[in-house]
Amino acid sequence: MSIDHSQELQNGTSPSNKIMVLFGSETGTAEEYAFDLGNALQAEGYACEVSDLDDYEASALLTEHLAIIVSSTYGNGEAPYNAEDLYNWLETQEPDLSSLSFAVCALGDSGYPSFAQAGKDFDRLLGENGANRILERTELDASFDEQVEPFIEKVQAWLVLHGQCYKKTVNLNPV
Image 1 (cartoon, rainbow, N blue to C red):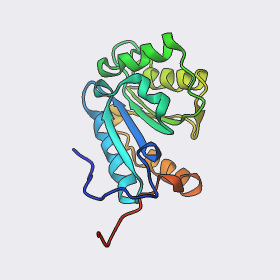
Image 2 (image 1 turned 180 degrees about the vertical axis):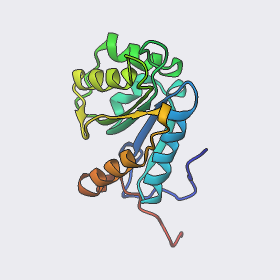
Image 3 (image 1 turned 30 degrees about the vertical axis):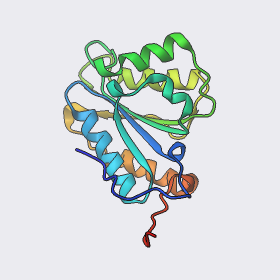
């Protein structure tokens, strides 16, 4: 799964004006949903990057403008292994994230009492550290193969109203 990077970003969109989609996943469902989101946003002309939280330096959130976290829940409500560093950083370092806007898509299995807990915790920790929530948290029951499309539609609707700065400017006539 990948995002198409073949179109060059021009003056209108700087790297800091990209949408950062981050996923924490144990079985691959959150990863699949993150790439579905990233591809849908890119198809709409938005500058977007999707990253496994294992490959993402937590402190880089300090330079992001918009981050969307798609996270499953593992065990008894814990963050997936690849998301532990971000979780611990948010919890222990208490960074000033007041320049960050965010949304969270929390996945879980409603058969467990800690349904979607990792996503709930990311949502809480981001808010406690000053980040601006752009959408109410979406909780999906992965055990019933609940689809991510309604969440994607919510993100797209928000971007239509508030996210023009994340649109790519494509140079159709290269010099």
